[in-house]
Image 1 (cartoon, rainbow, N blue to C red):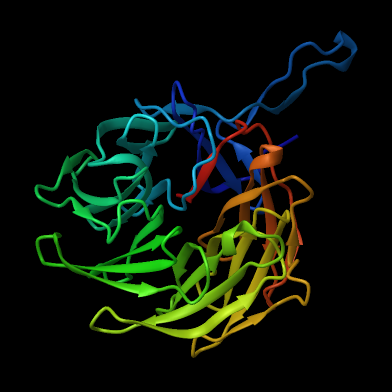
Image 2: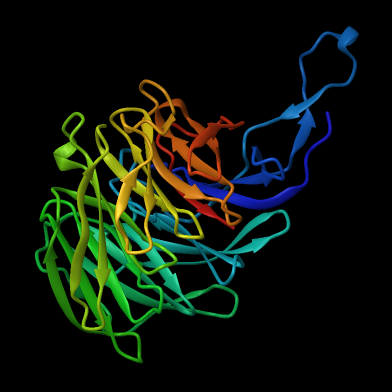
Length: 369
């Protein structure tokens, strides 16, 4: 049994209530995922089997903080930065944020700092600037500078309130040019856009009504369109996905409004690097819905029933990420404690591939490196 060459890493957050940690995996050249460290000796086999090797559990690296030990409504709880040299993670149970330096044998924690609010949920990084969205009634964003080794320093006077403290922010993300921050607010059916000055501080916020109910995760395409999932109160088979265009003044204009998934609880969004396809995980249906994204941002479903990929009953797919080469969609199937893998075909259709297990029951967040 020979290990395949590694072409990248995947990181997932354990969200453990006592000792939060990051689990680290290698992505192999065939798109499969294996725990960092590769082959390990297997014990307890009869002597007649001779030496045997297999894959053990993924190694974990403590954040220095605590998770919630329960479901966390967020996209972006763990993110990569510095062209893959750094990793950042939220500690929603201890109200802080951790940073790591990526090393050959895993991760080295370099800082853990207060998040500027309660229950940090989502992170975003652009250059040497990191922002966090805090929930649990605080409804704030806060900024940090990233040092040369990944250490975090709070950005003075950067804490800003969301339009309402109980809006349940799900995700925060820089726009592609780093000039603005976008925040989806689940309970307020709202998308807020913060403008940033040269010093990295917010200079104002514009709030926009979501095209559909309960906006959740989102991602910008390479063409600059904002793709947002809508969970519609997590009601069965009522989810949707919308696209927007963000203009130079921070206004959002709807391009495709609430295109149905025909599935339940669409939550996380992942786009291909070329901007041609987008995928959302349907946590309530154990499936993935794919869409073609036209040059003008219009969405067309890739499958009539919304089941472009299937993770299975009670698999509860949450976070998803497309590999940097655009060939594989990785999905964290929380209910089965596995990382599922789908090969992305030239027409956007998904073909099941080899995944891996061994994740903690409430792992969340997924980042590439």
